[in-house]
Length: 81
Image 1 (cartoon, rainbow, N blue to C red):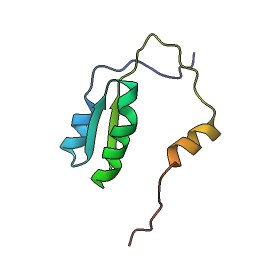
Image 2 (cartoon, rainbow, N blue to C red):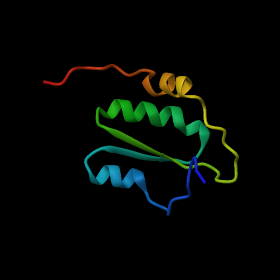
Image 3 (cartoon, helix red, strand yellow):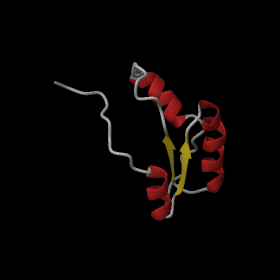
Image 4 (cartoon, helix red, strand yellow):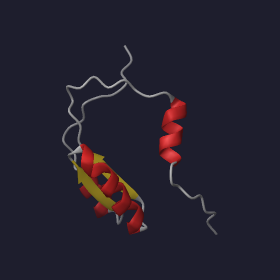
């Protein structure tokens, strides 16, 4: 049987990111996502948003084209030297 997602033990991914020198923030409410994304971008660091969702909600995964558009929205690709 194949699984789309799994329940992982409670890990504070935001704190893990901070321990590695990245920006990390936990988001618990939907209206906090956009401001948290802006703070992550403004930090200028690699970032992790630990978004807490209700595990009882049946989420239908979006198709890859939608994910690609969301993932790259607002990103500026800059070459590294």
